[in-house]
Image: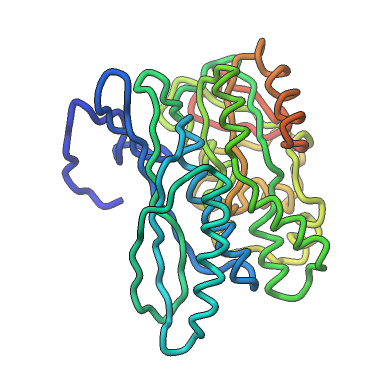
Length: 319
């Protein structure tokens, strides 16, 4: 973000001053609003499916903060002169079905004529001001849980190149279309110290945001990280999105490799995700119980993938 003067407000719990997943503004001692927006170009061919994924992705930021999304507004960029309006109707139908699944009310939106198709949501939710889950609250000794497998960016790239079979694409789409609602509710009940959702900056990129400038670091156990197995094959073939390489270039100075970590696996850890899972930092005494409840709640691939450590501060060690 450019160096603009920030507007201060005593009721602003978190805004643009650090890389949180959403903004939170306190209305009174019992209620705060959570605000976010996200939109992007299609990552799948089917318009309805694209709408579902884009909606799930936008809602995820509220879930990551521990909030409950209440209302949403459509954000649409559509090439009205070159694309049939039926495509837009299908996108909006997919988004609306996912919004309904989340128990959220669509209250409006805005559209513009654009040469490149884009879709997403602006989402408003609520939370108790004292119960906001920040990405910066990780404590030494915490266990790190990831609720969805990695590799969607690489698989989507392979799909565009015709290298991914339908079964792999369908499994990836189901993952991206799955709301983080249940995982968020379960982590709130368990009592967590920090959380972020894993999206465009990849697992390691978002983890770096959690410890940047902090008095703790993290250790990730690479063999414990859930991932789509086909993603490794595609990474070796070079079917990797540009965003993944940019993530690696930008954050490599904060990442230390302990042992022989294959290049393809490291790329998956940096892979730019769409509608990824939650990365949860939780006290060790509560981790196994939360993991069991996540599995029972449908997040069957959720796993403990690392821990928060006192040294090296501000660094991530991948073993």
